[in-house]
Amino acid sequence: MMVLGTSLAAVALIAALIAIHEFGHFIVAKACGVRVKVFSVGIGGRLVGFRWGDTDYRISWIPFGGYVRMAGADPFMEGGADDDDPRADGAFMAQPAWKRLLIVFAGPAMNLVLPFVVFTSLKMAGEPQPRADVGTVYAEGGAAAAGVLPEDRIVEVEGAPALTWSDVIEAFEASTDATIDLVVDREGARIPIAIPVEKGDYGAARDPYDFGLSSSAPDTTVLVDDPASPAGKAGLHTGDALTAIEGAPVRNWNEVRRLLLRAKAGGLAQVQVTVRRAEAASDAPAEPLTLRADPTWAPSLTPVDDDLWQGWGLASALVSVGQFAENGSSAKDAGVKEGDRLLAIDGRPIHVWRDVVLAVAASASGEGSAQTTRSMVVSVRRAGEVRDIQVKPQVVEDTDELGRYRWRPLLGIGSGGDTVLTPMVPRVYPFPEALGRASDEVVLVSGFILEQLGKLTTGEAAFDQSVGGPVEIFRQTRAAAERGVFDWARQLGLFSISLGIINLLPIPVLDGGQLVMYLAEWVRGRPLPLVLRERAQQAGVIFLVLLMLSVLVLDIHRAAVG
Image (tube, rainbow, N blue to C red; front, side):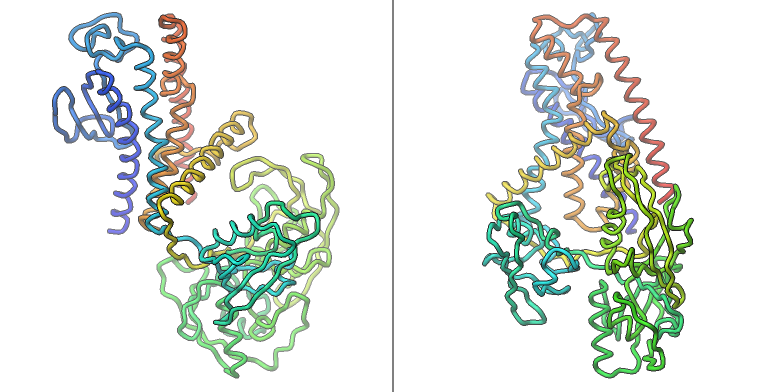
């Protein structure tokens, strides 16, 4: 039933996008005196509908499309009968060019207006946002030295109250003082903390991440790098995920750490945990295990072995090797193995995955494909034994999270864990502020899409990571529906922006191509030559067919690999 419900929600979103687009064409056509024969959500054969006046309002069988059929709208018809004659009263082509421009532009315009309504409504309704909890404190950046700790809840920044992480970001960026003053809630106590700003940065835009603060925390996936440890003897394995400790559910590694250390400090000789095995199905029940303290376990310690590891032999899998790059890995070739715990790189302790990224980046000199790297000593622990492995990072071209190409040095490894956001809380904005924030968001997303389209054109972004077709839209919408109505509505707004912008591209067959032709006609005072229009339409059809086939192949491949 859940799958059926989310599938219907995905179909509803796609239908809504099409309906609002076609309604734009429809309502402006009516206002301009054009007779509309069919208003259809979906393509193919008529499923259901009704006739009102001159128009047949219908839902057609295939939901991935829609159309408004206007009388006399075929620009290549030189004559005909009834209302298909482009010269007849109420025919589309009988209208002046400026009216046709308005009718064609109205579809994409409606798609660009819809996100303002959706995002404003979401913000007024209290769309959940990550709470202002500190998930991770990095060694660099000043926050750690100032005394901020993971699980601190930031309640004030520069005297302004903070509820969500967005409040924290905005207050940091607005600050121009020599220190950023926080008040954090730590287990019920309000603690003031001043984070110094390095000289020369006064007045510059700032972000909490620059000061070593993140709202995300390591997930509960465990790393067991010594089978002789209490964790190893209890039967825990690297890749398993803890779900509860002494009956209390755990959502991230900070909670795991706090509860296990509290048990140790309380003198408990054993702790009951539940674990979901790495190899188990997602719906498999969690397995109970017992962690027993072992005073006879006395391993040699490294700088990254914290009190949790010293007590139970547990660490976050975020600092383990989870997989190797498919296109080659210098670390694997040098002898690094999956499940190894990363202790240090060139003597630099590895506490979080960002330490790995920074250490590897430090091995390179030069820019772009001309970068060169030096060999590094990667210290790992494997089955309780510390090993030093010489690895020379490879400079490779890959893509970032936005699908944009870049050159960078890599060891060819991926983390064995992941991160999770802090708990979500509702955040309600009054209408004026909600509209302003929604407008900023629409402008930001639109700018990103236009920039990405430009980079696709110049080859600076990967096609297969930047585009998606009906299958991918359906998949993403289903996933959003599973997360709730707020995410579903946000996806509606985001897809609507994309649809509006793409339809405005100057490609024949798309609305943008028609706009170019009618604009040229308006400027010239007469239509473009018929042969030119026919050739442009034919080229546009061929381009779109090839594009849709390419996107469909990519969609199917994505679905196949999960």
